[in-house]
Length: 360
Ligand code: PMP
Image 1 (cartoon, protein in one colour):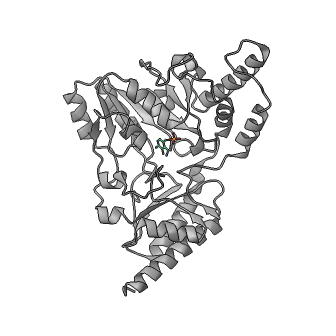
Image 2: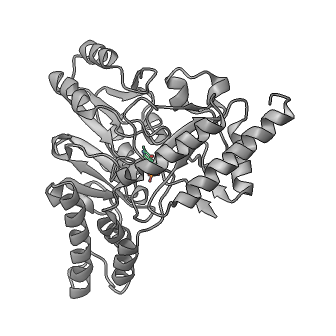
Image 3: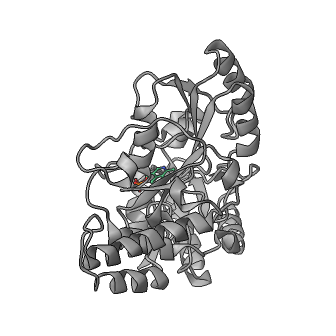
């Protein structure tokens, strides 16, 4: 079995596994004042320190959540004013508010600066602007520094969805007013993430109960998850560039009409979103699965259904083309042999489909 779906979730790195196994030995609720409680509280606060240290920020800026979905919801739902988000955001942003204004992207998948400025001007600034730093489907990187400048000019708060950014790009984290992360995108466990708030903003907890996480997230903390996240940082996805080049050259050698999205844009090294002409994503996914390779049609959809990507549609890609796109995303377990097999399977399917249709 070959796993090429790192953007959906990553394997847990050994350091995170080890730290989690050790944390299982501790008994106690971090809110309890007795010795057991204090011991697990220390584990939780050490994990918070580690997360903060990765971004070179103070630990108090880190609020643990169940992942980037909850973190995005927390800020978007709490914000009292106007919300603007790009058309290529993750569903956790797109579905959080029904009154948000959409900022279009250009054909390269980059936020349209003029449209953003116009929208901020029309709304007298003071908005919350939500932008995904690295798109999960295409791997395209947004020029966050420039977007931040525009937001600052209009006294607006930029919130960055950095779920796919950790280990893949370096950002000036300290300058970002707020951002969200999710551990299972960089080697930690599923079900833990954080919102990191550098510029104070009034937030109200989505979940009511005890006053955990300074009143922002009620409920007994996910200690094991937090410990796993704190120990997960470290893999540099940019080392995967040679595999990306090999994969994309192999695909283009097999079929010159294949389209690779964001080929000329700034893109992370682990993601390739590619169209096999006239072969639907479903057929491709099944074929890869039969050949024991796990890839994705784009965003991992909870229903397991394959739907046409809103990200590609927002980039002006016709429905017919977008329907034939698949996402291949690599990570630390990926080998050259995985890439060779992936190219061979792609080539085999492309040739068989086109022979069938008498196009060869
Ligand atoms: N934002 C982006 C860009 C993502 O890729 C994901 C996960 N696919 C999320 C948010 C949500 O993360 P989680 O499912 O871990 O809450």
